[in-house]
Every structure is written in structure tokens, then in C-alpha cells.
Image: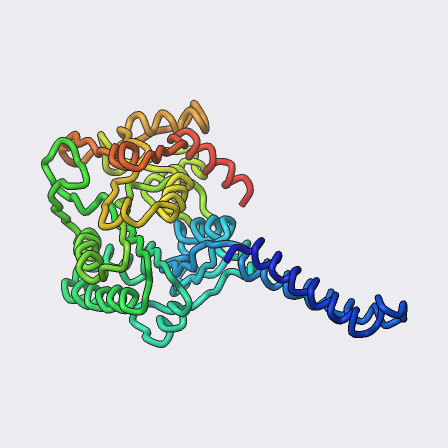
Length: 365
């Protein structure tokens, strides 16, 4: 029943009760002073109306954000709250708690410290949620510096149990964050969503297998989508940022010296705010439009020399630049057409905007 209909029905009930009570007390028949008695119903109706307003104030998702206190996660959480969603952050807070300071007082934010290995913490985190956005788990990120297949196997076993549990308890939508790194050493000239995966690092292998686990463990009533990310550019909610290109820009800002250790001819990238826009966009889509879909998401790609010149133009024309190319580089093109042609989503912020935003953020912090 619509809120307006409920209010109208409540008013009619009150009106009928008022007339009956007035007649019973003789206010209309005798002109006595008891006619004000029914006015006691007014505060009750007002209170009930206020309750209905708050109970029906929006139809947003109740989302568990795994990794919601990290660089990307904290920006995403802030924007999700601003759009009326109720958020539970599930994070180990390995990089501290400052990333969520600006939104910590929001009544629609719940924070649970832990990771997916802890059954008790996970139970608390999933309570009342109907959607999951898996941004990044600290244990997954640690695979980037480890060379243990056993560590990878243990993580994937835990991840499978998490997805299975989320699916079984009634989660309606899962968005898993993957990476373009899963294409690894593919020799294809154009990398599209269906290009064969050839991950070459433990972290890339983890994300590639995790994609498969999401597909295997999601029940028929769970809509799932997978986002494959390029390098992310742009400031965070605190001084903490991630990403190779972000680090290169930040070092250039601090030292007036730009160093690129491994040259690249086609480095895919996206502004962090465009990426968050895409998460929000997916949440608004119908189930049948995005279910069991994988999306390469990016604004474009850039060569090392062009990247260096853009950073230089935004900072200081006299900046020193050093590009160390230690390997043969093959030109590859990452296609981002699917999100535009099939969904109509178009990123808005180019590399110059990202660099300017990083410069502005460095002056504030």
C-alpha cells in the first residue's frame, strides 16, 4: 500500500471515530464542553504518520560492503549513503579508521571489524543485508606479495564459503570487484570480456578463480555482476590511496620528479569517482539486465610518455621525467564498449581531471 493511501485511510478512520465520539459525548446534541475529547486522537495520528514516513522513506538497498574502509571502498560507502542506501562495512581496518571519519555519525552506517574467516563477525555483518558489494579483502590483497599456492587455496576455500552463505541466507544481489590483470599475458590485440584469461600472478589468479566461484555458488534467485577494474586514479577520503598511477602522480607532486619504472604503451585507467558512479548505476539496473555479466570498466588507456606529459603540464613544465623501460612492450587495446553499448554508461572524467583532483587533494591534506 502506498504511503499516501495509508495516510488517507488513517485520516478517514480518525474522522469517523471523531464523529462517533462527539455524538456520544453530546457535544453536537447538547453543545456541551466535552466535544474536545476526540482531539486526543490528533497526536496519535500525527505520531503514526511520522512513523510511516520514516518506515517508508526510501526503497534503497541494505548493502554489505566487504573492504568498505579501504581506498575505493570508503569512497563508495560515502556515495552509497548519500544516495539513501543502508550500509554495513565489513573490513579488517588494516589501514586505520580515518577513511570513514566523515560518515561515521550517519545512522545508516554499521561497521563490523573482521574478515570472512570469522563466522561470528560474518553473521553480524550479513544481518538484514540484501546485497553484497565485494570490493577487496585484506587477505586477498596480501596475495600480491606472497608466493604461496597454499595461501591462495586457503583464501579461495574461505571465499567460496562466504559466497555460498550469502546466497543461502537470501542476498538478492552480489557485485564482485575483479581486475583487468586476470587477462595476464594474453596475446590478443583487443581485450574484451570474453577474451581467455591468462593470469600470471597469485592475486590475478585469485580474482580469476573468484569470478568462477561467484558464478558457481550464486543460486537462481541471486543476481550477480562482475566488474573488472583498470588502474584507479583520484584522491581518497583520507591520505591513503592505492594504485600504481596514483603513486606516480603523488610522488611527482611531492618531489617535482616523475619516475616510471616499467614503461607501458597502453595502460587502462579510470577516475575513482567514475568507478563509483558505475557501482551506483548497476544497483539501479533490473536483474535480468545485469545478471551473470562481466564488465571491463575504464575511461581509456594511455602510454607512458603521454601520461608523463599530462602530469608535467598540470604540475610544472620544468619537472624532470625518467621512464625506465626494462622489457619489451606489446601494444594491447582494452575494450570498454560493452558498458556503453549494452548499458549506456559513459565515464566522464579523463586523466587531466584525475591529476588535477590529486593535486587539489594534496594541498588540502
